[in-house]
Amino acid sequence: MSSHEKQHLPIGVFDSGVGGLTVLRVLQKYLPNESFVYLGDTARLPYGTKSEQTVIHYSLGATEILRNFGIKLLVVACSTASSIALIALRETLKPLPVIGVLEPGARAACELSRNGKIVVIATETTVHAGGYQRLIQQIRPDATVIAKGCSLFVPLAEEGWVEGPIAEAIATAYLQQLFSVESESLPDCLVLGCTHFPLLEKTIKKVIGDQITIVDSAVATAKIVKDTLEEQSLLNGKIVPSMTRFLVTDSPQRFVNTAIQFLGRPVSIDEVELVDYNFKL
Ligand code: DGL
Picture (cartoon, rainbow, N blue to C red):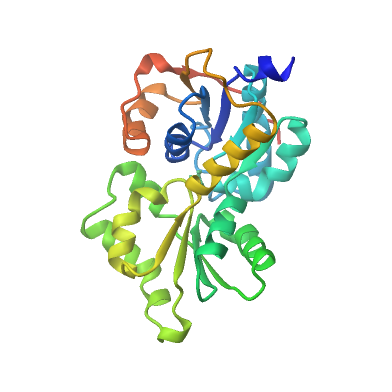
């Protein structure tokens, strides 16, 4: 297929479930002429508490569906899959460009932090894998990184409990201590290292204060996706009208019910297709 023909293919966006819609939302804003096919592996959600081996198997199985669909670039919107499975995905899907959310987020944090004291919040598996910590340290060797697992933010966001006493109590339990230190050790930057966490930004700010810079990896990722498409002459020249399709591996209705909070617009059941893959461990 010529690069001119490839321009009309959609961008694939892969996530463990519904949370990656926060990334899709930003991608659609930055790339309004592009079509997207979003795959949420809702049957296997959450990835963030699974072992590395399982996350790699799930990610390889799920993205095979997107490759067969025909995409010109893959965005791994899920931070857990980006931190664990990116190398395997790049290797398997070669020569398809595969972009994860970790490096863009880490780069943005290194640029935005003045004192180099950076906190990353993510799922348990992402924190345990240490990808954010390694990347930040590589890009900015003077940085001090604290990574904190905040797994309860995931169900809170899916339940829509992103503000109010319960969300605040949980955010306080996770974060207050890290930001109640002497001013010379006070982190000045917080990375939202999980698809779901942008929904809790207001509550997080209430707990840690307005002066801390919050990095949402989605914005940094969208810029890299745009640059990559430009470099590879893959930007859509607008001849084909843009469209978005949603694929899920479990109940389309449940996806539709939760999607609006993450995408900021309703998704109709007709836009969602049930798919699956063979999972062998
Ligand atoms: N998408 C996951 C992430 O960004 C959060 C949900 C999950 O645990 O699967 O890490």
